[in-house]
Amino acid sequence: MLSKIILASKSKVRKDILDKNNIECIVEPSNVDEDPVKESLLKEQASSEIISKNLAELKANKVSIRKIDEIVLGADSVIDLDGEIISKPESRKEAIGILRKLNGKSHFLISSVCISKNGSMIWNYTDKAKLTMKNFSDDELKNYLSKITDDTLYAYNVYQIEGEGRKLFASIEGDEDTIMGLPVKKIKEYLRTL
Image 1 (spheres, rainbow, N blue to C red):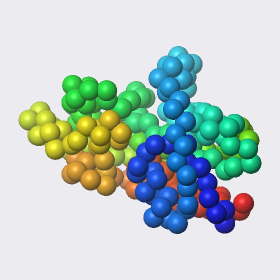
Image 2 (image 1 turned 120 degrees about the horizontal axis):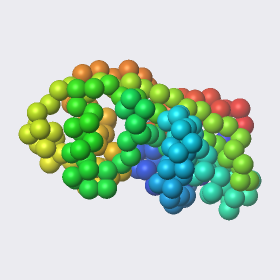
Image 3 (image 1 turned 45 degrees about the vertical axis):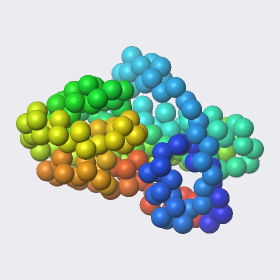
Image 4 (image 1 turned 90 degrees about the horizontal axis):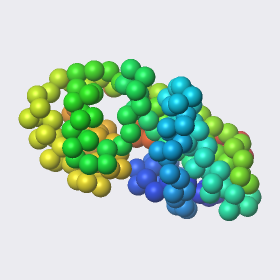
């Protein structure tokens, strides 16, 4: 297996997943402005899977152009609620609005990963998990949010499945690593082929 890869993400959770799986990586964030890309794809009525895949590919390719002959991993996750893409909140007011939308409903969390070399994608994978949120009163949602730090809130959307966020759900169907933003089993399978 490859000795070292470059992770085109500043996500601490993604780095932790790679570390736990003995995949050595150097962190080099892509700093891609995701919003214009998402807006453009939404105008074209792209599915949440296509949006997630395209963003992962864009991140990996952007870093890969500068890192000749290196293996670069890009990743992206989106929440899909009945076809509506829910982005990370930019304020606590937005966060409570997202929790109200998800309250008592099922949604999908889609995570895509892309591996690029010399500015081009050489492999990609997209996985999907279904999460069903319990019904909460507005006060319960506000209380939950009060326990979440700003760093966590703005990095992981409104729930962090490996932390306080697990309590929000009645059911979780799918791979936990996918929900945390990195379907690592498939990444390991691919890296073994290199």
